[in-house]
Image (cartoon, rainbow, N blue to C red; front, side, top):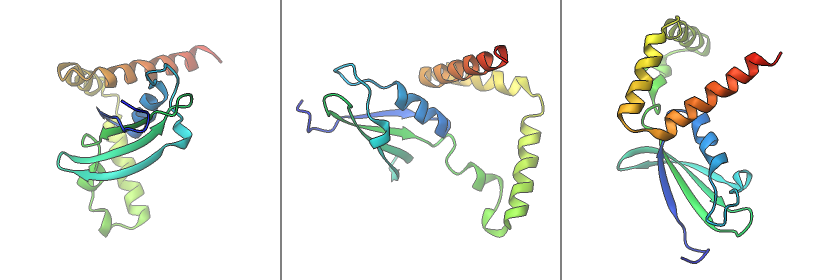
Length: 144
């Protein structure tokens, strides 16, 4: 494959932060990082659903890479929760805060069930992302 040919990889994402976490870890065949600052992100509708598409280029050899994230796990969730078109900004903010409080009400079982689903689906990148996020938080707690 020449450096001018596009190569595309597809991942399932569960949040935007996970997309950027994974992009920071990608390496080219020459073992160098892709230039994420030079990436171009687009939102596309495909037959499989909505996707985020990043066009990257290797920092060292210039090899292009297209990274596609299936965002079906979180695309449109707010629209499902509320009819956002009929709410003013203050009403939307209040409803969103209420939903977050209800969801985050110490429901460890919800977290564990979510992790079980990721595991059952073989979603290793998502589990690695969760592990890295937990390690980051543990480090922040340990250091004052």
